[in-house]
Image (cartoon, rainbow, N blue to C red; front, side, top):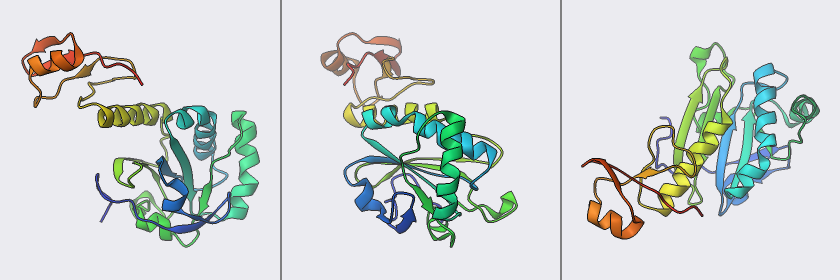
Length: 210
């Protein structure tokens, strides 16, 4: 059965381009973005892994570690990384998991035989510091992911953990947020100040950043 929101992310040991890791020990105390890609030396994957590397400062600012996975070997990953670096004008510093026996991919539901083979498709997990799965995304092999959207979702998760609010459609950091139905308008004014009541059930407030 696929992992569901709120499930504890399974622990695993694996060889990576940064050496052997124990997943929970590696991410201890941090948010993590674990994402799979179908294969090394493929065009879409090259652009994706490069983009994640370009965003290293954004991940760090959010206390988040990134880690990739494919069913190829560490040796293949290490041969491929220079291509990623050159194509995207970046440096891949995060680990890439080698999963030739597909044990991690199976554990995390990353194999979709209906895609035509048993390589991993484009799955993303955002996992919080308590090792809980907080967001999942699955893309077909032909469609590259938007990691700016994954950053946006991470911002929303971290904000709504910090403050009891919800985020509206297309929300970005700094935008107004929504008062949940469980909070009265009076209480919202006491907590947040000005409340824009569009409907009794749709109320916007501005939340201080940081």
